[in-house]
Length: 90
Length: 210
Image 1 (cartoon, rainbow over the protein chains, first blue to last red):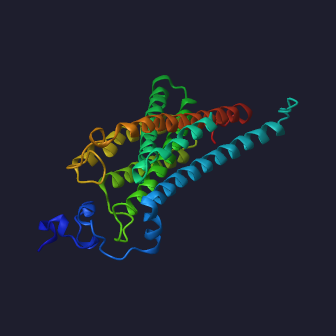
Image 2: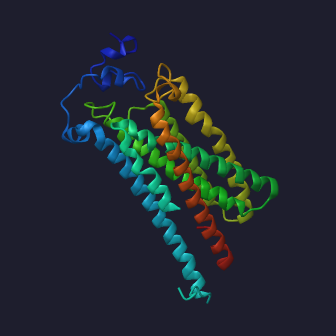
Image 3: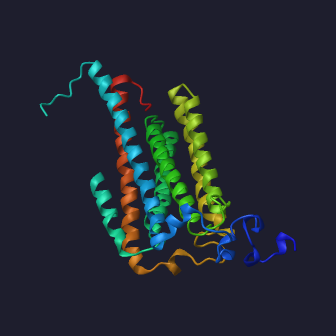
């Protein structure tokens, strides 16, 4: 059977999937044993997937903040070199 | 305000279980990207209309932070799909149309940053970058929303899939909408921070590039 005429539910693994996503429809039953990472990620109702997603966003936002801080600091340094004082007694 | 944005978003996630909660995190990334694109395109348009080249800085910083949120959205999407739809397949990337189109869009914005960096004369740079940025902004709705809806995809609203409004429980909207507002607010804070830093730098060293 040519892959193009095959029903997506018949797809046994990724190589038989259509050009773009149709794989999930045929993957009710895992086609191979779960890897260790998947076992961890799928435990507790897949809550760890949410954890991973949230952590990625948190770390990303932290990086963005730190970069902002670095830029601000470089401007402060320039201003100090020019003799502009920031010391407001704080 | 930054703290408030975090505190608003985080405690509420305990309402529901399962990966559906990613709706609060993965999806607002794309709303934020879209908002950033609007802000960026508006300022690019103003550069061309009024010739205020400092607005170019606003366009640049909005695009940068927007692209950053776009990358976050892409990475979280990869992780989400890997452990939800691609279980047992060893696939991380399966050319979901929306995923592919979004990568393409991020590459278009990558070219914008490179193009901008390649020009030395500030006036010329502002104008050329503004023209290109307007082009990049026009392709965004098509690549993000129009094309993926015409093709088979994991995402809601694609062919054969129910759209957001049909599948989302009201209780999730309770968190989802504030999450969108929160993330866009976060974008706005970071964006204005950068613009203010750039203007400060411009004042002390006559060079607004960060």
